[in-house]
Image (cartoon, rainbow, N blue to C red):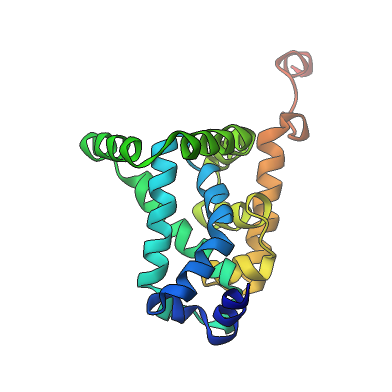
Length: 200
């Protein structure tokens, strides 16, 4: 706990050069990152690998963290979003096969069971996340970070590098669109074919 406080006080930048600071940062945030990843992918080995990739990317970009732009967790979710999005865009079958094989070798039974539990627990959120695919990228990103990952609007704005007002507008539009997608009864379908015929 003392190390975690030191990381917060002296800045996330220390995780790139101080193994103790990184270990404290990792222990504090690994479950949040695992949940973040598990909402977006359903493959156990890929989820394990991406979680590791997020922390590697965090080490490599630790110098980019600025306290004025948000909390460490908001910054880390920004890093995680980039890592996960990049992987989801990759289409190569060979890459996916390698990922699965490597993940199986790295996971023991207990770790595999924990990831399976997380994947099961996040199944409903993954379904909601799938419905979000209909939203424009900017709206979807804000909605994910606020409604799915639990960041405040200010933290989400910081993670995305936009101002809070723009984040608020995107969130409002995203919620309105999701309401239409999830509950078609809220949409005005217009007059039925029978009513149109009767009007003629």
